[in-house]
Length: 322
Image (cartoon, rainbow, N blue to C red; front, side, top):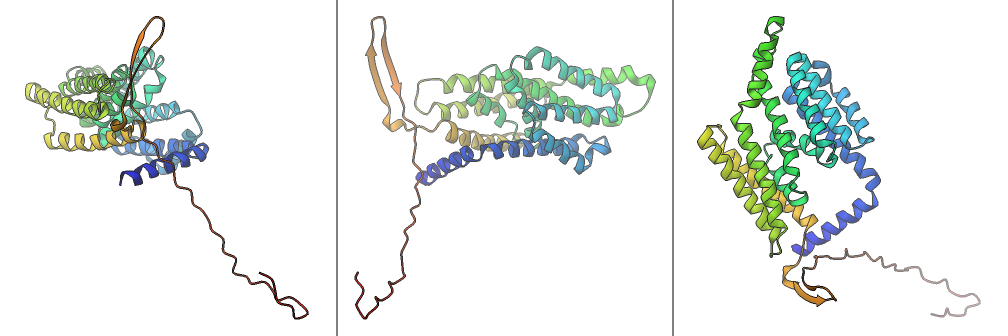
C-alpha cells in the first residue's frame, strides 16, 4: 500500500512539473471561483455580484494575475456586498483591511492567502486545518496572519447575524451602526478565544516539528490539534462562547487528515534508516542526525513490439532464409 502511494506521489510530482504552466492558472481560477461563490452565498447582499457570469469573469481574470489579486478580488466583493447592506459596515471592514495591510501584509505578502483561506475553511467547517498547516509549513509569524483571518471571518459573521439591524436605511442611526459593529468586534469572546487557540496552535506545532526527534511532524500535529481543542473548550467553559463540541472534534479530525496529507507530500522520511554522524574541523565538533527521505522511482512502461509479418517467399522457387 505504501509503495503504491509513493509511486502515486512521484507521478503527481512529475505531472505537476511537466504541466506546471497550465496547472498554476487552473489552481488560481478554481481558488478564486470557490472563494467568490462562497462569499456570495454567505454575504450576498448585492444581487449584481451574485450573477455567475460576473463571478466567472473575475475568476478567469485572477487566473492570469498574481496570487494576491485573488485576495483583492475577494476583499472587493466583500466590501461591495457590505456596502449594499450598510455604508457603515463597509467602512468598518475597509478600515480593518487597510490596517492589516499597513501593519503586517506589506512585510509578509506570502501569508496573505491565509486571510482568504480561513473564512473559506470556516464556511467548510474545517478552519482548524489552517493553523496546523501554517505550523508545519510556516514560521511563528504566521500566527499573526491566522489571527487576522479569524478576525475577518467573525466580523463578517457578526454582520450577517445582525443584518436586520444594520440594514435599516436611516441617516440618524449612522453612529449607532458604527457602535454596533465595533461592539461586535471588541466584545466578541468567541473571536478572542479562537484567535488565542489558533495562535498557540501555530507556535506549538512549529516548535515541536523543528525538534530533532523521531516522528516530530506527527507529534507536532497531534499536540497542536489537542491544544486547539482544549483551549476552545476552556474558552467555552469560561466565557460561554457556545461552540459546537461535536463540530469542533469532527472538524479537528478532518483537519488532522489534511495535515497528514501535507506531511506525506512535504516531509516523508524513513526513520528506520536514521544515521548519527560525528565529525570535526579546527574549531568545532559536529553531531549530525541524518534522516533519509523516502523516494521511489516511478516505474517506466516498456513497450515490446512483436513483428507478426512473415517474409515473402523468395523468387525462382528458392526457400527464404531465416
